[in-house]
Length: 570
Image 1 (cartoon, rainbow, N blue to C red):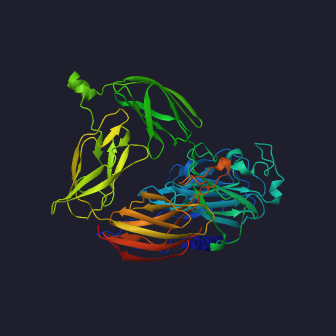
Image 2: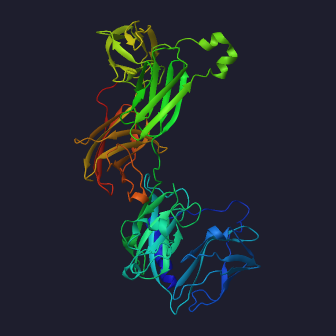
């Protein structure tokens, strides 16, 4: 039996990794890194008819126990924890609970046994016994991965199995008094599991020595080790029951996608005067249809809709009472301007400060995008002079061209519709009075220089076979999302302004249509949205455009692509 289980676990491990590199020892000879080895148990391991109050395990060297309350997993779980101790080369476990009849108990020593002299850890040791005449011999296995990135979770995950087959459904939970069918959707919050294990560093987990039957699987961070889903704990669960089997192979391995719940509610995170006459309000979630009440003010939302910028028509205003209303939000804000300490130290003249210029360039030096010259306004602009143009001089030959200005819808920015060449220096001039803000002030003249850099482009042609809207995310070498794009019905997405480097593409199956990935929530039985990765890592180079085809499906889909030089050199 033992060899069959070991073969099964080896097969599961082979599904996770193709192999390990051998490591050599440093000069001076090998260090003693051999872990302790079990040489005997009393009663013997895999005993039947167990009715003792304790058991002991003997090792080939002196050992110590490391945090056994957390590092020893017991299935079925015991209400009263055993007492662990060491006596020389023995580990002694005193049982403080009444054992169930005809039950197989498994003690998994997860990194709990350490040799006394070198501190070498015994990776795992299992002691099993049955209170009946036979051992349960069935198994379950799977893997826990992060729902967002598909990687093993950063911390060990406790995986719990609940018996739900026909015979068990007639039973009642001793804690709830309800049948198992009645509380199956909240089982991780209402009753202890029947069996428990923990995932390894690769996310792999396995139950063995369990009875035949059907099980529900739930994985938890379980930071307080109470075998219950706590508020804010990351969780994963299989929505249907799984069958225990007598072996482990690729056909019966369960994938659990773990994610933390989003328990955020809409509220004001910050509301303060950033200067006299100007307030910033930030909220926990994007605002839907906000209303702001107050005296003589104008406000605008940022592109993420989670920050409101407020200007008072009285530019010297230093106190205000505002009422912010939005979906599931109503907050009265009482604000007062406080002079920053640095300004206080510089005296009254410095406190007044110099007014910020209305217009500032977002592109200068070598940081400008080659086809996206942006301007920002410190106060909302209400009007642009008819026929307004930016004057752009190419420094190489002093040639001058005029380009149109396009105002953003919120009045906080504008774009210069220029066509520039990469690597060449330009001087951009805006004459005065081109823009008029909400206070009737006109802009001053502005001159700035820039040298546009060249970037790469990725063009994707997606075929959506998922049945859900798709959001495309571009990740850099640090797995940071640098671009997010909704994919429309055409399936074509063009991503510009990518610096040279390696990029991965990720498709979010946007089931709820909110334009971003949504985490799971066990309490509402909402699984995390599926995420699939493009099969290739794309190498972006300057002046090159990569063009790819992607048939997106829940298992990732097929890919085909080509890389072409960009048709136009900027």
